[in-house]
Length: 448
Image 1 (cartoon, rainbow, N blue to C red):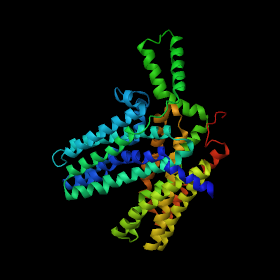
Image 2: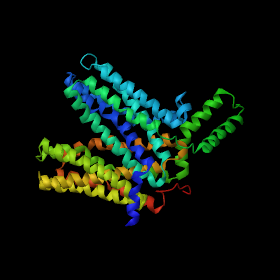
Image 3: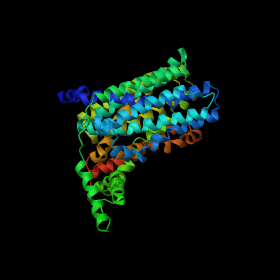
Image 4: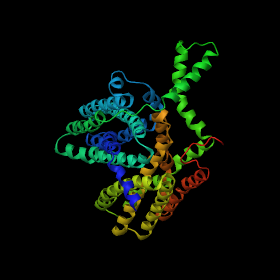
């Protein structure tokens, strides 16, 4: 029991505590270009069809791996010299976000919705760019034993920030105006600015590997008569090191098991994502009121998620990666079956509390463990690029695969639907079993 108590102490370590505030900085912009903005647009008389198009503002989050190599390798003038490569980029993206959020607040959807869309896209791009470097910073400043707690605390801050820029912004706008709400949100970005100014720069581990990669390119080009001083040589070396090497390293270091790893990243939380898309329509259809949904599914569910995140970080530190992935994967599957039970019983508020509590607890634990797992896959030499790619794959179930769940829900009873979503969790568990058998979870495998 003592070891389990000791495992919880990780939450009080300085590298973990600072991630709470950096997570807040990461989560704050999201609602300002999504749910909060959609309410502002509706109040301003923007048509529903136009508001629907604003959903495309989330594209930068899905495509951030495209410019992650630039953030991973290119130093910023002044910022990188004063603060270091990672901290310099973080501060630059935070300043850009403050300016962009203020600009968005100064716009008027009723006069020019197109300008609002452009400014909101800039906010989304700056936010996705901040996420790239914050994820790299988190991975590079934590020891392996801290990854679970670090992921949990980071998401804690992220969720609290979403409340601030969601409900908090609505409260401010209700008592004042939208401009004031967005100015307040821009001011809250100071939380991340102060934190990164007081934080250390991570060590430049991996420099030897990237230098070796660059030397390989120069040797290759020199053999073909292209000297290293030639602009073609410099450009080729940079592209290879920054863009090609992160993907080559990931594939080569794991051999054919890299395919299993990537499939596992996509499927591990598939069942959880499939159920989550249709949870609110299900609750409405079986007879729960909006107040009941708000109190139980939202407020109580939020609390359960936060507890689940904490438990996930503690579990990883106490039980290790493989056991934690198994425990959370099974809990996520069982939480989907709880909704099947709810569908059979109907609008029972006590059962809803148990169902929502269990589902959010399992989802929070699974999220903390899985973010830690993604972090463990990254080579320290290419952290930003590799994590951006993996987190984009992680988003696939939430976007593409889960998009068709509405058609399934229309075709079958709710009980059957949630049983099907539980079945959707099985491929991830089968891949986990297969990878465990080949020892491909916690270390690279190259022997094919």
